[in-house]
Structures are given as structure tokens and as C-alpha cells.
Amino acid sequence: MALELNQLTEAVQALSANAAQRLVELEAALPLARRRLAEIGVADDALWDKIRKAGKRWPGAFPTEEAVDARFPLPPHPARVNILAADGSQIYPDRHGVALYYLINIGSIAFRHGSGEAPRVASRPAVFFDDAHLYEEDGGQIASVKIDAERDTRELGELARLAQIENDAPALALLDNGLLLYITLQAPNQRMIDELLDGYLSELDRLRETGAAVAGVVDRPRAANVVRLLRLAGLPLAQITDETLSDLGPFTHLTDGLVFGLLAPGERSALFINASPANQDNYRPRGHTIYFFYLNAGRPGKDALLRVEVPEWVARDPARLDLVHAALVEQSRVTDGFPYVLMRAHELAVVTVGERREFEQMVTGALIRRGLSPSVSQKAQGKAWTGSGKRRYP
Image 1 (cartoon, helix red, strand yellow):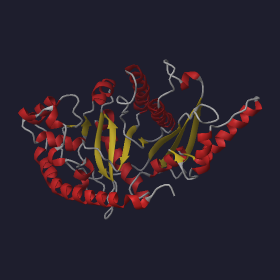
Image 2: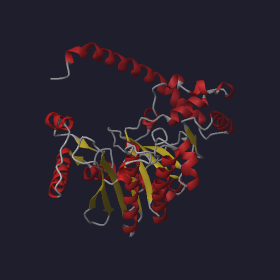
Image 3: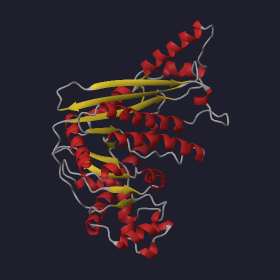
Image 4: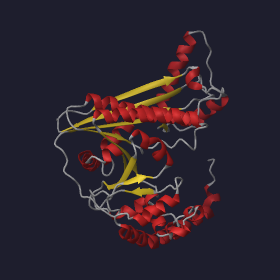
């Protein structure tokens, strides 16, 4: 056994003590946060003055015309709706493998609610192996962030394809993630950022043209955008500086999810706008400003809080917004707290260790038939001998 657990006993005790102390602090901060949420109500000019002073780099949330403490009940679910979901997985290039390539697999499902038909499922793999895909202009190997963005873009593209086909009823397209591409801190240059964002936003353009609603769903959210708004609201205008905004003050470690834990099953929170510079600089000019709300998709006795992100053309359309709200709750009843179609899309997208091994055997066989002698590195062989067969490549 490589992990000497007996050496970690003291650390585990310290970890548990830290967690207990943090819980005490959170229980003290939560009532204050909820009181401040109620005090804000509908944002006034004074709050907007504070938001403007916080500047473009402030990672908070902009309020909308809805009162920030509003709670919206579950709307009726339509008798017929096509619920579409897509998810993706990838295998990154491995310089120790038999060949250099990367693979993206997109799983999707079309659930025709009210039709009596079985769901339509698909798995669409693609492999990339030529120099144009594997190397950057400077000769370096493709960055993983670029592969991730390509996967996310293909997920949206699959949803747009499905929405064009499944057009005999209102449609809702779902992603198992938020709708903002967080690549600006990882991509090596602005040119790559612009290229990746343009591809992603072009697929959002296609989705908008279909008339479908679209939403990104985040399970067990850890964001604190609204908490940052609460912190900002409590500061006098003169005290708003980069230093005072760099921490959450009395709300340290508090998350939006904890604040909106007061939602009853089926209720959603008010809409907010993500204050991210990427949202304002890249999404807004294309008409895709990302809004979000929190939703209790659980049932009495078992809450299940989701963060739901929607583009402005859904947020500003009451019918489509209600469709997102109602369908997510209905889908989550099937699987006890998370939309069934997203779980199924994930299952269709995942590449298991066994599937990867079979694919590499296919590659090896093809290379041998062409007179080549493929081999893996000693490091890769050692991993194969000692690694777990249960590992997946989501």
C-alpha cells in the first residue's frame, strides 16, 4: 500500500476541527446574509452606484428588475415538450501512447415528453490527429483548454442540431455545466481566446435561431456571485476599494447555494446577471448575456439546489423561462434531484478505460498493417499495470 494512512491521523483530526469551526461561522453568517437579501429588495440607485464603483473586475452579480429575495413558484409543465441534452468527454493527447491524438465524444438524448415515444439517443465520437489540430503555430502541443473549449462547442452544436430536428413542439436544450467559457485565465494568448469564444458563441447563435430555450445546469453550486453582491451592499460607497472587495468580510466561505437554501421544492430565486468581464465584453455584444437563478429541484424532505444559467433571450421571454423552470423540476423528479436527460447524456458521453483500451488496440492494429511498429513508453506501460480498471475519462 503506497498511502501510509497512519501518518495522516493528526491531519485528519485537524481537518475535522477546521470543518466544525467553519460550520459554526457559516451558521452565524447565514441569517445576516438573508436579512441583507431582504433589505435590498429591488435594487435602488444607491446600490447601482456601488456596483459601478466596484468596477469591471468585480466577480459579483448584477440584480435585475426582480426583487433579489423573490421566490417564484413552480409553473405548469406543458403537455408536450422536447427536452434535449448533450454532454461531452475527451481523451487528451498522450505523448507516452502508441500515437498522438485526442478524442472528443458527445453523448446526446432527445426526450419527447408527452409523445409516448422512447427517447432518442446518440454518441458521436471524433478523433483529431493531424498537425493542424495537435500543434499551435509556435510548435507547441495543443493546450488542454483548447480541447475543453472544442468539447463545449461541440456540445452546443449537437444541441443546435437536435433543436432543428425536434421542432414539432416547444424545445428545451440542456447542458451539464454553466454557459460561460472560463478560458481567459488559461488560454495562452488573446487570439486563441477570441477564436474559441467566436466558435462557442456561433453555436449559441444557431440555438437561438431554432427558437428553443437553452440552459446550463450546475449541480451542488459553489459560486458566491450573489454573496459578493450582499457584501458590496453593506459597504459605504467611500469604502469600496479593491482591498475591501478582495474578501467577503462577514460572509467568508458563504456560498449562494447556502443563501438560497431557503427555497422550497419547486421554487426558483430571482434572476441575476453574471458580472464576469467575459459576459459583459464577449457575450453581451452578441445578444447572449448570461443570467442565472437558483432552483430547488428536490422534493419535500430532500432539497436539491441547482444553479441554472440562461442567455438573455431566454431570461427575457417569460414562456421560455417558465419552460426551463418547470421542465428541470419535472426531469429531476425522475432521478431524485438532477435532470434525468443530463444524467443519460453523461452516460452516453463517458469513455471508459476499457473503451479507450479497445480504441488504442484499433490504432495499434492499423499501424501494424501499414508496416509500422507502435509501442507505448515504459511510463505508460507501468501505469497500465498498476492503474485501476474502474477509471473513466469524463
